[in-house]
Image (cartoon, rainbow, N blue to C red; front, top):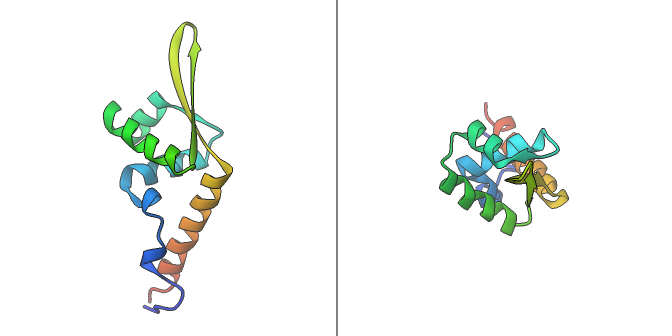
Amino acid sequence: MSEAGFNAAALDEVIHGKLRLGVMAYLSSLDAATFSELRERTGATDGNLSVHLTKLEEAGYIKITKAFVSKRPQTTAKLTSMGRKAWIAYLDQMRTLLDGSD
């Protein structure tokens, strides 16, 4: 494998965690997703998903919106422009790693 161009230290640790990676991948293909939808797609528990969504939100990668829909609370997550840029940079780093393998 060629080492030129790949730097493991450059991988975004906020995204690289398994659950956060899944959330970012899922949100990158949608406008937004509800908490329930993310929980179902990732298989995470409420508490675990909440912690990881908070970490992504604190990094500025997602925006969390809380509202009432039919008198029921609903939490929605959406990638921010900063989050989309970070996601693309993460994918580029992974491509560099994969393209360097022989």
